[in-house]
Length: 149
Image (tube, rainbow, N blue to C red; front, top):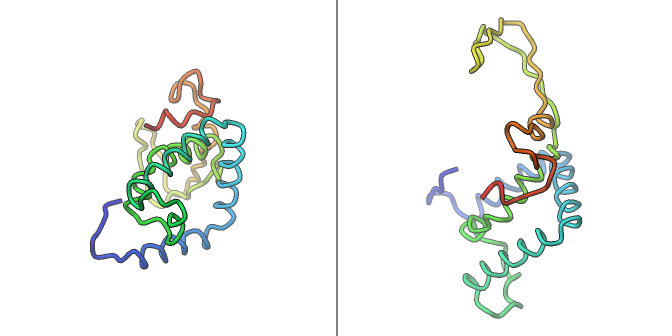
């Protein structure tokens, strides 16, 4: 996503809130798994807290009481790379929508050369892809946010 100076912080907050409310079930599933994984992996939680504190110290100063006066700005959130990695890793292991199907409107060819005729139904398992050793390695079942950094 490219940052556009023409969008106000308030507009971006409304867009983000709209996505959250529109996808409340998938958001709640994703956040439930994320918090569970953080609880099971306290070192990840600690790294997230350190990152948040570091960013807020640099952007809002050392007075901790002022850190929650306003929501995080886009630039502050953009700097939370470890948090984003932890969220991505959580979604890899526990996707909110574990499988999906698509109806093929026109004849098509998949990247591997497989022909898919119009009228077909293509189903794919996001859950399975997130656990494939040949993609993620032998430790594919482990929660490792570092793989996204």
